[in-house]
Image (tube, rainbow, N blue to C red; front, side):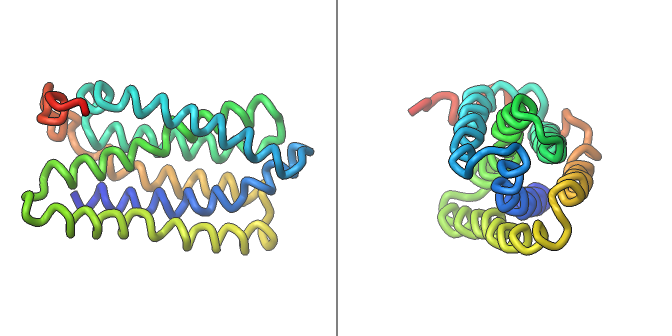
Length: 190
């Protein structure tokens, strides 16, 4: 699962960078900083939606493709934010909400499923650190780079880098990592 954890950490690094740019996106749209709340609410709706659909999607696509498609959707949506248009910004927020959780769901599900019970707590804590700590670095980098480079160049570059993260996940046959048609978690929905 190292490739998944690496993809998760890299994705969260770029998510931090993207998150640091949100106020520049809102400024380019001509709105007050409060409009950020609207974009994040739409992103949250996307995240709730993918949460509801993730079980069947994981079974249908397999873990690696589910994660890769989510990363790609997030990357493309982040890049399109360089175009200052309200409907597009809202659609991009929804797409980021749909895409970003995919790699997180994949990584954390795999870690929990494949780790022996005696090691689960430590392993999950380590995986969480490896996946989520890079977000802080991304936030700091984004805050510095937005002033130096500018939004219109930074977002397309971010898209290319993010898409590069998804590619290694697609180099395995989908059937090799599909989850079982029913897993133990399906039997215990609570």
